Structure formats: C-alpha cells, structure tokens
Length: 291
Ligand code: UTP
Figure 1 (spheres, rainbow, N blue to C red):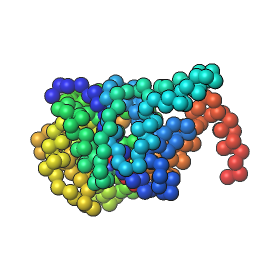
Figure 2: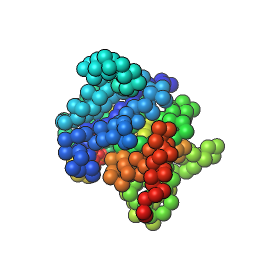
Figure 3: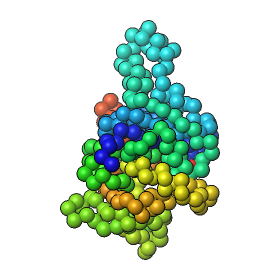
C-alpha cells in the first residue's frame, strides 16, 4: 500500500437539521461563511493538499452544490460583457478547482454508509474524507499535514484536536498511546463515542478529517447498521483496527463546526476579521458594540 492519496470524499448526504430552518431547502454545505459556501473551504483545502479528484456524496435537494462547482454560462457571459474581470475570475475558479464526481446516497443512513457509497469511484487506493461542515483554519492545510503522516506510516490517519475539560463529552474520543518520536501522533487502539468526562480515554477529540486505506470499504460492508439504524464510520474504523494500524494526529490549526449555529457564528467573526478588504472595519465595528 504505497499509493498516493489523490481522492477526497465529501459526505454531504445529511439533512442538516441543526441548522433549520435555513437548511429546509438550501443544503447545509451551501451556507455561506462570509462569502463562500462552507463546502468550498473544504474543496480548496483538498486541492491545496494535492488532491486531484473530489467525490461528493449527495442526496435529495443537493442540486445547488452540483451547480456551484459547474460552469455558470449565463453568469460568466454577463460578467464578461460588463467587463467585471475580478468577479469573472472568482466564478470561473470555482468550476476549475478539481475533477469532480457525484454519487447519491438515497437516504441518510449514516456517515459510514455515505463513505461506502463512494467505493466504486475511489477504487483500490487510500483516500481522504472531509466533512464539509468542519471548516479548518491552519497554517498548512489539515489534509496536507495528514498526508505527511500517511506517507511516513502507510496507515489510516484520523485528525484530532485536544479538548480540555468536560466538553470532550460532545465528541468521539481517541484511545491510544502517544508516539515516542512525534507528540502529535497517537497509536490508535480504539474510539469512544461521546464518553462521560470521567470515562474519556484521552483528550483527543476526533474531527471531520480522515485518511483511510481502502480496507475500510470491506470493514464497512461487514459492519451492521448500529445505533439509530445508521452505518457509523467509527464502527468501520474500529473493525479496521483488527488488521491494520490506525493513527490519531493532532493537527496544527483550528476547527470550526460550521454545521452548528454557534460554530458558524464563531467562524464568521474570525474569518471576517482576517479579510483584507474589511477586517479592520469589522474589528472597529465589534469594538464599538455596546456589549
Ligand atoms: P452531521 O451529523 O454533522 O450532518 O454529519 P447532518 O446529519 O447533515 O446534520 P444534523 O446533525 O442533522 O444537523 C456529518 C457529515 O456527514 C454527512 C453530512 O452531510 C455531514 O456533512 N452525512 C451524514 C452523510 O453524508 N450521510 C449521512 O447519512 C449522514
């Protein structure tokens, strides 16, 4: 297994209920963070990491995502006619980011099921999984950091972040020992979904970035539908541990849960503050709020 990671799977078949009513008609992945749909941040991260092929696992009502990454002939022609070069660049860039494929998940039957839907398109090679609602701000793209680990260890890698205190209970938590040579690396021995604080096996919360070997497809196929009638990715990875090494990697950077209203607010403020065009104005505006 020395193949390069060339493909990224974006599971986007979920219903986005935490963001209702905005997501009744608009896919969660298309909600704008400042001025870009959240899924575009993930695709740009993948492309900046060297990913060549992007696979979207979509479902009913996700058509806007397909249109977003396609050429918009009318829009581009109008911008060209009006001489709006910069806006034309922005529009064209989206459709030329990467080779894109789509596969439908007929019903949201869990993250593991969504990943399994991409099996034929991925083929027999390692691949990345990017959960679009986890938006990451990092000095080096998170997936690129994880590829370094994959290339060195030739095994699946789960991105984690360190959580101090009881809020660890909101996450899937990694069990395993820290690597002797790299303090960001953990030799994964298990995972516990939303443990009580006292029972959490570590401070390493698993976030929405994975590099997986194709062995995951076989273990997912063998794994039954668990809690709530869903096929969980976690169960597939736990089964993979029986035959392969899996590593946890504390990525460098910050993760925002943009699929959650509060997380989206945090991301909006922080990403807006970084923008050259209006960051300073926005900072002054926030400073003057009577809070
Ligand atoms: P989430 O649980 O965060 O997304 O799944 P959700 O189900 O859309 O949102 P809520 O909880 O109802 O608000 C993480 C990612 O996995 C995808 C989702 O689209 C999201 O990007 N997913 C989840 C699927 O593709 N298929 C599923 O069956 C479940």
